[in-house]
View (cartoon, helix red, strand yellow):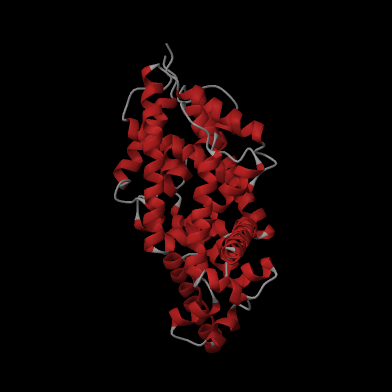
Length: 190
Length: 190
């Protein structure tokens, strides 16, 4: 029992170090050596849990997925769903930064590319009923809900990227103002 | 003279290899060794032109900037300006893929972060008069042109990312349809 507990605790420490490395330096900084240095441990310890850089990358993406899930509230309307992905808190800023960084490795490796494509598809699928609901109450124009969901997801992620590179211009308050102005502009007039 | 010409020709070969490496594998794949392998030459030859990985990264970003400039037509309207950044041709797809990949290194290094922030600011500055023109003819709603330019740049780059990860869903034709639907939805009704 104690051995198991030690093992689990150590694994959690290694996992936390993986997250700190990508949150600070992105996927370009993620190596067995950098995780070991972050832990103040030997590379051998890290390879005990993650046998390759590929496994480290996979684990970092799983952590990002878990944290994203935990950070997204129960969403019943479009505005809340889009606002939730904007880097308006330190926590979401860190998660966003890790996702945007991950596109370098995800574009390069077929398996990670397929995972990211699936992740985008799931997100648009979640947005779709919210788009249809907004259309039904006259908050969005008629038209293909899939195209509208794509456009709104695009708007939100494109704003994430600009905010990550220019946080003094895109304060949390201004990000939300831009979102609200955008949604208001899409509302058909009566 | 011949020595100079040889040197220039060799430099162009190395430069072309740098581009092929990032266009294929992103910035995670860009090393002195991978460029040498792409050239079928020794690492020593590459270090003769680029002394460090940092210099290779800088050079790849300059190449992306040059190619971007060459691919963007003289733009006098918003629709053309936004359509020009969408990956609807192999050439723009390659350039977009390199920019999206570059965000990993650019988020990690203060100097590259500042360069990317400046690049975004220049882009929004170029979009701004086109936004004001569109507002003046009733194609865009009234409101802060800076916020509108940010939102449109966000929409375009977010669509770029989704198209790079899902090119079979987002064919060139569908990307342009989504852009046109989006611009039509933003047009205030008479």
